[in-house]
Image (cartoon, rainbow, N blue to C red; front, top):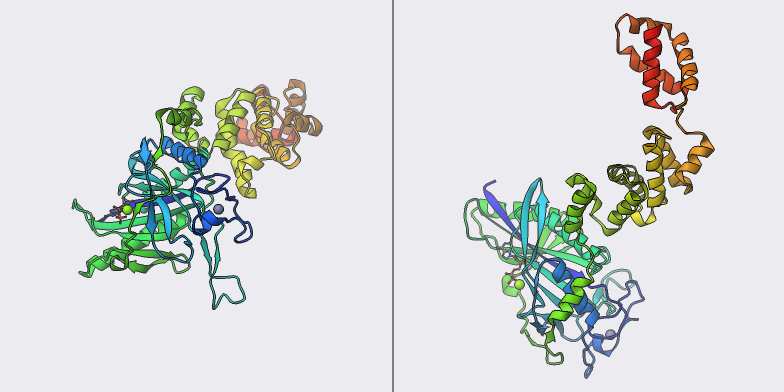
Length: 480
Ligand code: ADP
Ligand code: ZN
Ligand code: MG
């Protein structure tokens, strides 16, 4: 690589409140256009904003989860610009004094650890939505829906600490996990509750000074984020290779063309004429409030991952997979509580359970098999009642019928045959029917043993206790 990429992200996350940031209108997604509006969020003259303290608590939650320093005083400002989806003519946003500074996330990408620092987290309100499509006269008109205007957001700004497209995508993925885990955001990128802009520049390898950055907007999936960064790196390298200069500009990701397109240059950039919002007092957050929010926080994914390794003796890999979502981690812990075998629980949850759910496109919350039932199945294996291969069939039936493992095993007669006399009968039959293989084994061809074991398993419908079957078969062969 002749050039080293430098990447910083700006992420907007909707705070999961019932009502908007500065009025009592509902934030529910999908309501009919302009049904959740009032004089405040429509910017009618004389209407006054009142801060939603639930939104502040959620912003504090995000700040604490990301290790930021909460600022005792922060200030809302007016960011002025004209756009049809912004009826007030300004957006209320924290500017010079945001609610939190610093913090960051540790990532593991391709086996290497990287710390991505945060510059800041600030609170702001969302704008409305322009509807360019879907109406008979959409060719000529744009319609406006203000249901989203005034919905509370936080903007999370990272330091330019990432160096590859994969690191950018990994940061966004981990950040989404944390925000969803702590209940700050619903993680729904299709509905726009989580949006990411990527700042990308390149510099000749070995040089300290950063190159000119380009900001790419409209990245509403992990894949688009990665693709857009990849595209920008190539495009900028091409410009430099031809002796040109990268222009500082805002670009848009065009997902159908798989490329970025210029939206506006630095010269066309807005001057937002920020000034403090005169209708809102400074936001003062006392130490006791921060402590109350901290006390209400769930265990964070990184801490839970460490605990899973310590408490259950799991490999770090398992702990990482199981702590990717709060619901998966809870499912695992309930399974262990039910069966007492952590490694088996981990194998079943990461293996069969996730496989079946992925196949059906279902989430863990929709799993037909409860953690207690899965624990029951694991106990049957641990006690030697069924073999692990039969257990997979039992699991599939549990998933299809919702019945408990022991009920299925009893109803279908799937318990292992651990009865020596019964197994000997089958073994005698197998030996009588496979004279050639027996002769070969006795002549020193050890490999035929496996074949004979297979025949015994077949003769018992897979239900022979494998250890006992092996032992009895060997005895029978040796004796004959
Ligand atoms: P602006 O003034 O254009 O908003 P900031 O300095 O506030 O720029 O940074 C905005 C985002 O761009 C941050 O995420 C930051 O990490 C990132 N960034 C800043 N400089 C660069 C650069 N040279 N290359 C890539 N990203 C950058
Ligand atoms: Zn309103
Ligand atoms: Mg900036």
